[in-house]
Image (cartoon, rainbow, N blue to C red):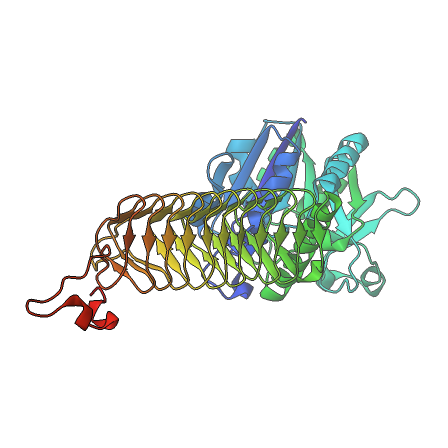
Length: 466
């Protein structure tokens, strides 16, 4: 497409009552301006320019490389903002589309229709319009009777009673013929307040006898500018509705869509079921045939096929096919459940792996640890991985059986098939197939009779290994 897109993202957004630039306020897990850039890229423009101003460094950092950036040092209106883009945009393509970084709900199909309408009409300027429930405060679109050609945009304060009765208003999104835009923009006169308004170009085009076209958007929500928190909440609800509907159409079951929160960067396989009060965030990937929730949070994590997450938190972690966690489990950063592994209620894993088929049933913590295939971790087991200065690892071999309330004082290795007795404090490595118990844990020792006393005269309790 022979197109340049300019995204205006210079405003501070004072009504947001926040030091964060308006366009960086999050929407469905991403800065709202990032959604606008996604739409812009879908149109495959020859040139994409972002005009920054307030918090420009933050905006550039959030959006990264790709767009051409221009800076509006002083906020002197939309016309001045587009002027700053001239170096990166003028003469680059036949059509220039100007959109706003605070209109994240605009759809690529709408903008594509607008561009086609603009180019088909041979217009110098095309306006995207809408019909709000209450048009007060908006610039009215005055059309020529019979032809529908736009004659003017009349601001609310200057409108007559007849003009105020017009329901069609200006969204602010505009298309221009490149060769017409830049010389006319350079000649634009400031307002009484010293600002340059892009919409003033409409009157100039009409005076020159140029065609000014308009296309009405079907859904006014698409062109809603998010300039305070209440509108941000409205945009969030609409974005979430779109995301959820998209996943349901792709074969994912949402038991209660209104109580399911899926951010824009998440991916979900078909036949997965999402139960209510579940939040899927960031770069989360979920496979096919999973059951997620209720009441679960999954953030920046990889979930395989056929997994289950119930009333649990999974963050920066991974679950391989057929594994499950919960209820009330916590897979922390670096946690990994191998194929078919199970972590039950009140379990916690941090920078640790449960190998294939391993089980950690309940009320245990494993940090900086590796657990081999088929091992069993008894209730209350803890890896004592931090000595106050450094973290240390625990290695548990395949098929090992760790008794309830075992304390594993890292660094320590438990060999394959080894066993620890309940309540043990393990401070030394245990060989494969070994058995240790006690505080500190030791292998079983044969009883030794004291001098002058027969072994038979001692009670069984006195021979307990200490």
